[in-house]
Image 1 (cartoon, rainbow, N blue to C red):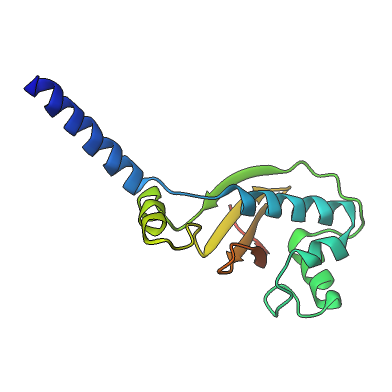
Image 2 (image 1 turned 90 degrees about the vertical axis):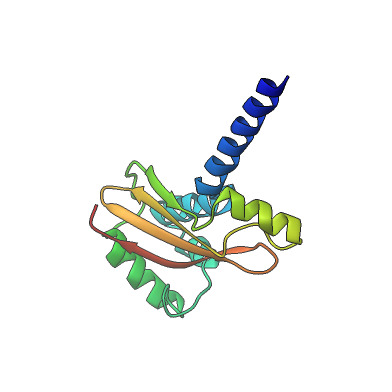
Length: 145
């Protein structure tokens, strides 16, 4: 009986440690960032712009956004039918922190998520959530792999 309790305690401690070290990334920012890339490649830049916070880092005007997205994605003509591959996510929060936030009655999602794709070049889309859990794209860039 004692061995069983010890085994349960060891397994529970190991699971708690793993959860505390595992990165949590919610699905919504991944889906929004993929939709953003699909809209851009389809040439629907207005739809893509509506997914952003429409501030300086993404383009505070539609013209600035269009110039930035064309430069960063190296797109001259639409539609661009390049294959899209998810290569990484960074949620900046562990499952342990999610549990702690949930217990405290706070928003469980991290404040910022970065999603990396390969679309002929490595491309990062950064999103932030507000207190209501609504996600907006706040930054994008092509970068070195």
